Image (cartoon, rainbow, N blue to C red; front, side, top):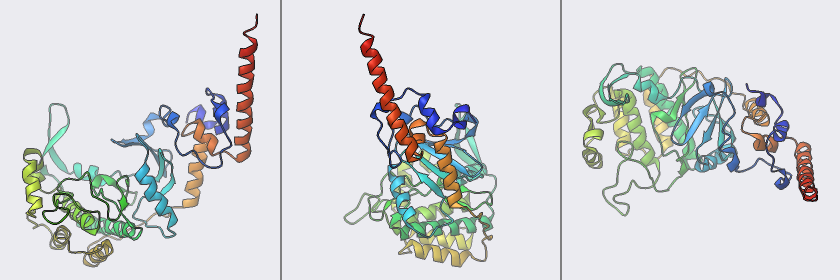
Length: 370
């Protein structure tokens, strides 16, 4: 840990160019601080565990990792605010300890995400750039007992979200993490919306365009219909080791044909596992009116297959205190460190800042005299 992290947050303020003249007593954490962007998170580079188009992830401790966004987590904040209002907890949703506009503190999952796991089971072309290309074959298939457990956990998470009045709207293996006991944890709620909003930013095979009705040529409104369709594609990917029609490279070679097939409900042949195939088909054909019924049916039909989960007990209050201590220690920069200090320290810095500003103005003034 760097020296700046070992010092109390209030000491960090003295070591930066202070604009303390504009500080006022703060009664709650700062909502948004643009000046934090260039500072980023002052933890070691080797602690980075992931990066993406919208956010980067660092490991702050053995149980906590902060995500910092390249733009504010506006949608995710709304979802977590609603989640915090709920007394019950869903063990299949990633635990969030603190949610700020630019930073979110989550429970650490050491076994990466499902997309990486399935990617390692595949053989793909290697392009000249060194990047991986088209699928050649699936070298290994996932254990059905794990697939059954994961689909139970994922459908349970979606049913819980539905109870809150929300849809996830971005079901994909990359958004499902695995903890130390290989339990699935649904994460990444940056596209989560209340039920009944227009579904945007999706393409087959994760969504299907409507062919008739007042919403023709759109993906429709977010609902159990859109969630279960994506869930069917998710289950297909786990069972068959690749996305629908990826084995014939339809997405790369003829994306228009891929869209036509899904719009016409011409789905790939299902012939690998009787129970899983039936669940995939049911989701693709919009059999279930609610996600609660999806979760019930999935659990009922896979109860004899699924390996039993082993959840680690998370002390939410303890982990949240640890997150606050990290912020106070300067993990997210001096301004947020100050905002999380006790009220008397914030008042002290307000007074000190105004005094220093006044003193500087006075020195500048008298220096103008010969």
